[in-house]
Image (cartoon, rainbow, N blue to C red; front, side, top):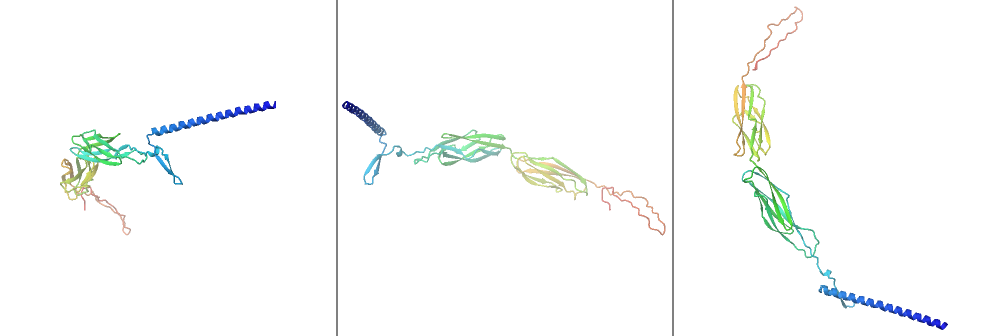
Length: 338
């Protein structure tokens, strides 16, 4: 019985050992197969890379050397691609010209910059071809085309002409195209007429008495109703008129008030006439004439008022004098009375 039991145990142990050995053999085969596949994949990857991978040599402490493959991406330098962007130095242009054949010019800047990017070792500088056009014939831009490199600027000139244009505001646009950029620059031209003087009122009238006080002052207004500045000047034919200001300058739409004060101290009674002439600085400005008249009347003779015919006093001899009596003397005429 004991012998039978021992043989059964020995048989069971043998079966268990055989099973474990088979399992280990299976795992080793799978690992070997996986390593073989991985090795094949690496070789295929190296072949497909076209030999881009390089060799890296390492020196050991004992002086021997070993080689290893470099990463493909470690051998590629970064390249920055700059995108050119155009910009203008001014947002708009404005001009004012007198009517006629006048011209005016102004400049503006064109700058080419690039969008921010990483600073690679192989940075290239791009150039952009550009063109500039005007929407109106009275506006020209020069140069009308060109090439500009990234990081540089150029100066362009806009020129306007008032020839053939009506008075008033005229608008146009400069369109600049370059690369993927389209820019517009608004331009305004105000065509104005020459300066024009107006004087009001057209006449002044004074009256006083010869030898008496001077008449009160009066005033005239000189205004520039045109589109350009005007210098003005007053001229007189006689010297008994004193203007508070005899010359000046007026911008379009502005005015000045001039006070006129007659001097009658050396004039006799009678009627006087004067022409006050306002001239402009340009030959096209017609003179403006203000008529001034002065009437000096004859003075009325002195006239003493009536005096009382008598003055009566009552007194007693030996007593105090009587109280005084008064009377008034006045001049009801127009001249001094001595």
